[in-house]
Length: 342
Image (cartoon, rainbow, N blue to C red; front, side, top):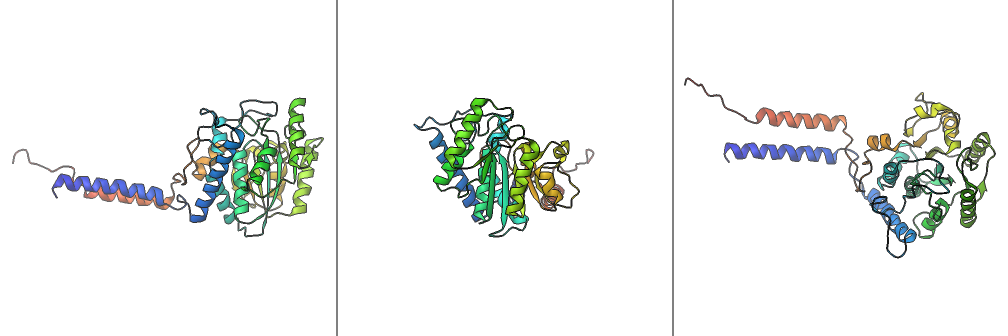
């Protein structure tokens, strides 16, 4: 092998080595059970597309390009606030089911342990993933959902969350039925919704056979949810979206990082359910800022679903990459000294 071929081989080796370090660093690849969970979510999404769009027309390519069936409308009578389309699509990535499963395991949860999910309907993809992950580990699950949704969430009056949940259960993708719904909006009693929107959500709750709770104030919403949690006594709380009762009215909640928050870290959570839960010494998974959360957890933002996590450069992988690079650099002969007078 001549000098040029040797140099080319070393550069190819460097490139392959860096790619392998990126792909096989801890957490990127999915285990066998995680792959099954990923495929289960993707199959559920295929089913939802056929259910929501009979006749094969499918969702609009510019709104739901990866055909998840979980992206809603730009506006409707059941819409509460504005939302980001890219974040809603990101929330549909099946990798979140795997991430929830790992969060549950990191929290020490085992089969039969109790976990509660309190969510809005703004991120139906994330909600489906959380439910499926909990059921995949055979956790005992308490579920309550506020039916109002921000833009691009479960805000299609023809298919609000109550109907999505029922269809997913009927098709065998989930087992859990919500304990109760609220209307969502201000105070979770439907504040800000039109009479038409309230009527749609009330009808959907009746059709789903789930009790609808209509608090008269934010304080009452927090009280009702807290009493339900205390009666169920879960070890961990999952809060998805911006339900008013979950967040409360204190701006302190805006400083709480999204993702898994453990007690004793000096983190406040405001005066809603999340803050009270952390204050009681129990962990909470807070899901809201999708851009920050996806970047930290290795879920590509607004990208096609793929069954592996994006690189979250760990210290070991970074040092290994630098060592490999400088090792090749030091042995790669780039020039030869020639004496111009020799």
